[in-house]
Length: 201
Image (cartoon, rainbow, N blue to C red; front, side):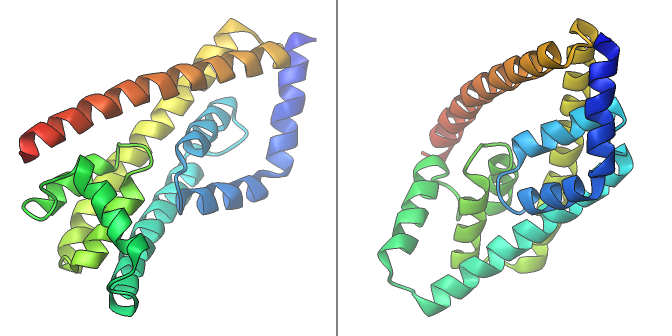
């Protein structure tokens, strides 16, 4: 019975798999870490195909990064002295003070700082950093990010399933793993920010 409850959930997701893929793709255009972890969990359960998830997520991340870059270029050209543009620049510079000296090293680091990646890309657009160099760096960072979060989600699914096959307990374990992940990420982000601030001085 316990195993059957998880199977019901898997079957439901499988039936609506392409809706799930669409949501995953759209989530990657913004901040999609928890969606990526969830997709990894569903891949472990067999509800999603792991290669489908990888290519859909990777494509969404790249499209999102390019869109945010060109949005930055457009906004800087259209509204060069607007307060919100200055605010975004100041926010990014406060964490990444040497962005103009070494923008590509910092954009790579920002990929793994929650809530900072897209604002950093906007600033690169404001600064009109050479696009193809940006694209090559972002391609590598996005590949590592996608593989890392997909693998972590896959492990979360395995760990939760080992704990219990009963759906409600499985979900509780997943929520606990998400909470642990967010806490760990916050600590790592703070450590990286301090290092970047120190190196930027």
